[in-house]
Image 1: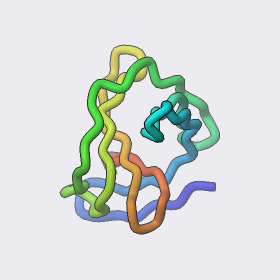
Image 2 (image 1 turned 45 degrees about the vertical axis):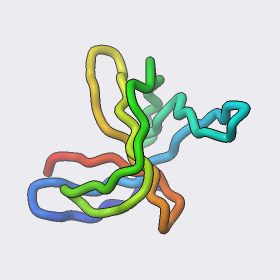
Image 3 (image 1 turned 135 degrees about the horizontal axis):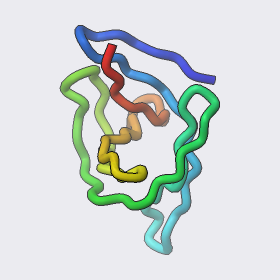
Length: 88
């Protein structure tokens, strides 16, 4: 199930994510589902506490690589949901 929130030129799109946890309890996203299509995450380049300034939301921001594309994946602390920023 996906839902979207629009803010200016960007949209917050909630997504489903397959996650592994390491021995320290840190999240490692492995696969993302966007509009019922699954995309394997090739690698997580960075993880940091951050806010999405484009669509709102505070939590963890993961810089991920899917194929040759680099993008952000957010885990929102308040809702405990995953989202991405999409262009309108």
